[in-house]
Length: 637
Image 1 (cartoon, helix red, strand yellow):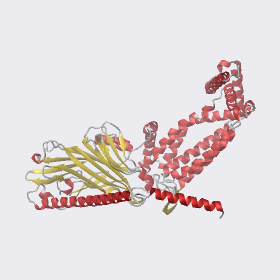
Image 2: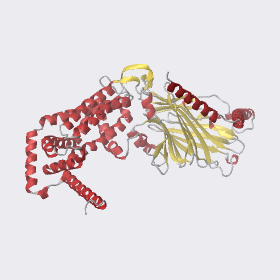
Image 3: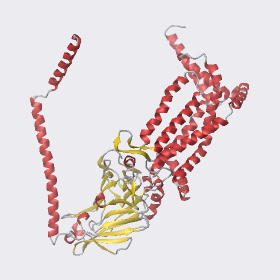
Image 4: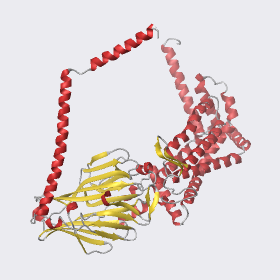
């Protein structure tokens, strides 16, 4: 170690020691920090003790009510907890006599899954403590909480039941349930003989609705992207809390029509006839993979309540699939006459993309599905139909590229004197002049392809939300709604996950091959420095499929399969057009057009001519600016 190195180390050590001494807090600062730490610790202990005291106080109050024969709802504070079932052809609901609310919802004809594998014939949306609902009424002497009351059932049928909690002589709290013909449940709450127990200005009740959103599908990460607490504002559209970050007691300033606890394919929705009041507090907390749950949801809300008992408080619940047509038609079963827009729970993308899915993809998909065609074939047929619709644009794009390809020798000859970097503008002008002579637009190959992008994005939004794909097998794929692993391992690896999806690999490999094909085609029409620029772009085109692999490995096999088939047909169409295009005939047509334009200069039109004119105008402006600059410097008179 030489002298300079030793001096360097000594200086570094001195700087570090000096910096640490300089930043060392004074005795006064240390004393303040200790004092603040003690205050924070005492505050935390006090908060904990206050919470325990509140719990003990509430438990003591409940015990006193149970022991006090004159207390409100004394006889309803104890009893036997029994289950009441309401059922139709679509759903079976279990209502608990304690609390008088739904404790279990089973959706029929949808296979239940456990750890991604079929487990039960029907799907259990929630059960037991997975979902809790409590209504709280603020009386003069005590708060009435339905979760603590035992209700007595009466007027029981397969689809209706009346539940009554006795508050005293002639005083009752009555809940009535009516299950419709599909997934809609109507509920009303009404008090009788209790008007004097509430303050004169009481006109609302509090609601606390909580749920643990179960993992229903194989892919936790993918399903978790679509598990959201969604709500509809009365004077606005639907919104949702972040699906990735934790949100606690998010205050919503506008009145709400409904709140939904939604996962990828199923939802629990609560609708209020008289709206949920402003400043509802909504919570969404993501859960860990392996817990069996996606999110913890909570909604604290207020709604109308009539203490006189003349007008009941009414709700409607939807426990069912996120099927666009079902959600759209379920509004007919509602008694409230609201424009609920429940179908917006099925996300269809941005406005232009939503229009494609709303008025094309959904109807074609439903039409093919009703024919009993396997879902994999349905995806292939939709792909073929979309290729047929976009074929004129694809052909126009290809022919534009073919024209530039056959004109390449002429472009090389016209621009060979402009190979220096400073001659880039003159070279571009020369190219535009050649294109204008032959009536070729270099942009015509790009614009039609851009028009196809909304279709790709539309399918990106549609396929993961298509519940019809759930549980449907095709070829080697067990379930088109989730990934299709060829290899799985128990540990999560960063960016990859715990599996390799075969359809994702096929999509990415086909994307690389398609990129090679298109790059070769574009290379045939490049002139001069464009070839060098193409080399830089080439790496990006090859890198993109690799990025797609990390993104789509968790995505549904149905979406990856669609992209794979789409690329396959795109490559096949390009191959056929390349084989059926006669370059000599195409060049002869362009030469004929050139002669026509030469004999009639005014006939030159199109984008290339306009671009050439713009470039000439810019060049003239640049020349004038340079001339003025030289005059200013006195170089010319």
